[in-house]
Image (tube, rainbow, N blue to C red; front, side):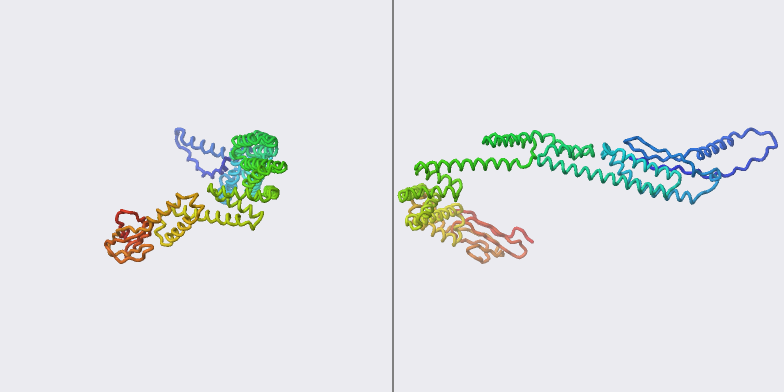
Length: 497
């Protein structure tokens, strides 16, 4: 940091000492008095001839200015005078200088700690330090107003210097970092090198420079990946990208490039299937062609290329092909693949929307899917059958399933399990409730109950919501599942308020 200003004050005047009266008799030499006089004279000479020295020094260049100009130094006559005005002026000047130089010292510390721009602009910085030393010289000559203005000017110049170097650093850093993201090696090297010259000690550069060091390897791996992709070596292309990500995990767009490779593979696979299907169609191998187009449609539903090819197959085979499609749909139904069956029926209807077997099959499979889904929902949560609405709906679903030939043939176990469940759920079970005669108890699906100490109810198996309220007590809410042989349920105040 900059050395603080040190102003050496003019020594105060000394009182005249009256000479001692002439001794009438021979006396001993007054050595103590002589010693005092010597000290006083020495102090006077020191104050008279030792100049005030104020120095600003750059810790970088070790350059200093020592002010020895005594043009305004006090004269001998000043020593014996009291100068209160000049001393007051000095104090005011010192305070003004300290206020300005506090900022100067802080900026100087920043420049020298960070070596901010000194590799290229040492002369500019030295000139600012020289200006501060010139201000010190003016101060030493008691040209206070001039010195204060020079301090202000030097501080403003140093502030502008710091701002300019900081701005250049930020611009270089941001441009270099953006170049790393876009993997522009030359730009990144140039800009980050410029940033390092401006702020060689900046900690934020270390991570970015580490990434810059890895950038050539990352770029090389990505280039090799692209070449492998052009050769359709998809596995190698993916491995090279993964290796690039391991070298620099922050490399952008690696995941996007991996996804693009996967999409290219899917596209290549689809094109191969479609090409083979059209090749079979051209060779009049209609069965192979149809299977190929159907496979293509499974890969890309509603794809125009596959639909066109399949329609061409159907046009060639005519009614015999429709018959085969009917057999295929019915086979799907028997195997329980209802959605595939419904899709085939829909394809037949696209060829001829008046074919009754396709209309019936499409409606039948759609209905089967609906009933099967409803049965699975009930079997997954049997406790919901405590609700009258759910119980009635479940009975309706069971009836539909029992009357549906396709479901009876493909899912007889589910139908049987649902029937057993509904039979059990239809038989009420006894349940004991215990309270304190003060709690107002309400049972969902039943309603408000009269106050009681002990109450026996008959409820269908399943899930119920039990609530209770009483003055001075927080409301009680319980979800209970009614099962055979269950313990009594207590609903009493557990949290007074």
